[in-house]
Image (cartoon, rainbow, N blue to C red; front, side, top):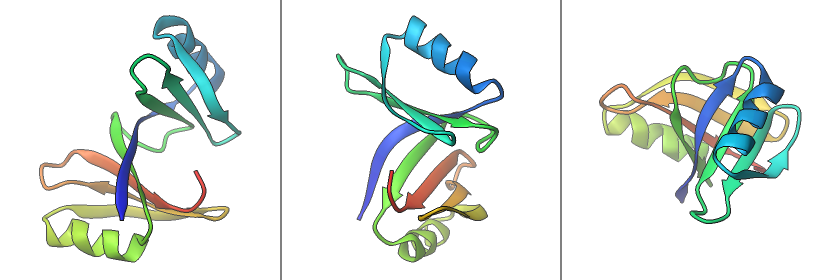
Length: 111
């Protein structure tokens, strides 16, 4: 199963971007580590994931999957492409584009 989890953006200045969105958009920090922060709006329940460093080139949909191999096959079958595969700790992931060229990030593991 694959589930939409958040919208992702990358930070050049991690702490400054976190301060911007917590100050501007009323996001609360739901989870934070050296690699990413999950910000949640408690009124709308929307989640924004900010990665520490450039991991996506544009705002991107984030999806957690139970089966990264099946997700890869499905993306390719439906006309998307896998741009890069990566591993970070116990997470495996892929930077992809959909059939229109929009970026998406798919991962399996704890997050």
